[in-house]
Image (cartoon, rainbow, N blue to C red; front, top):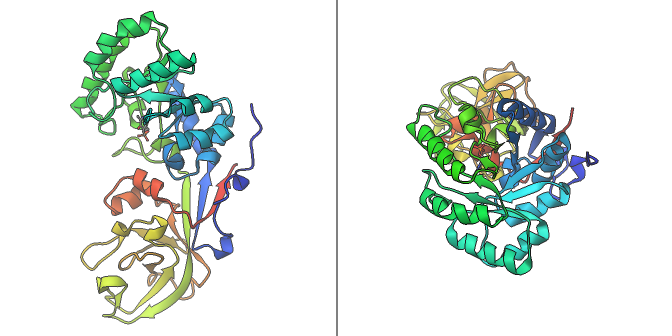
Length: 384
Ligand SMILES: *Cc1c(COP(=O)(O)O)cnc(C)c1O
């Protein structure tokens, strides 16, 4: 095992000192590792890879990559070459697949980084082939077969036509891949259809490891596991089984500094648009986090519709009014006087407020909340 670097020193943009920051973001790396191990156990004997695209879902590519690598993860998926480069710097021996595949002219960079493109079309395959044969490159690549999502991937018919050639020529395809469109909804008929179609393709590519399941796919049972599973969201605590209890450990905590607690008379409005009116004389904690920090404006509250909550002095309190760029307001009227003061924190994510709950209040999914996590926070990386 490699030496585990100190995660707090790993990126230059770890944010301002805690005392100066509007928000404090705590990422529990041990929980990410525990989630990875739990998913691995569930998928055994398949290998558990880790998807660390989009800055590891906002949690920090270097920190998460190094920690999972140390925990024993050997295969990673990123979205593009820039992410592959960052990951290579902290996970020297890892196998790195680049999900968005090969942009024109980038094959030499793949070789230099020892990264593997996930090839998603026949033209991409042709460009990769040419590079590999002229440069004698044997670094491996995944072949993505589309089984119903119509995003990336060659068609099953193209895959069938290619199979004899790829098997005969020791082609350097190291993974056969497809992606589920509806895995978070086990009742959706497309799951069965994609699993079946991918099984047929795999039979033609016998001997090449295969991979189908994302986080939710791991919970669809053995038929979806194949040889390698590719969890992303569940590693970071998002519930892979919506509608059921979340089997994953929470990873992210977000605390906002309270700048000021003010009294608002009954009938006065708060914030832009004056869409939230005090129904009685209220106390409002103004907090130093806003939508520019990735705390989604769609989680705002109006007289018509509540928004997200915060935990202040141990109690759930509702957001009041529109979320501004750098500020939001929390109605702390239900707390005893002086329970919250300037310099205290309001917890926006943490305790029983999950990433998925915030997402739900904003009309989106946990993935968007995670990948929006801002750059102005003071970041704390926890290892138990
Ligand atoms: C993002 C992604 C994953 C991970 O999906 P989660 O739902 O976050 O687990 C797996 N495979 C592909 C192709 C992806 O794009």
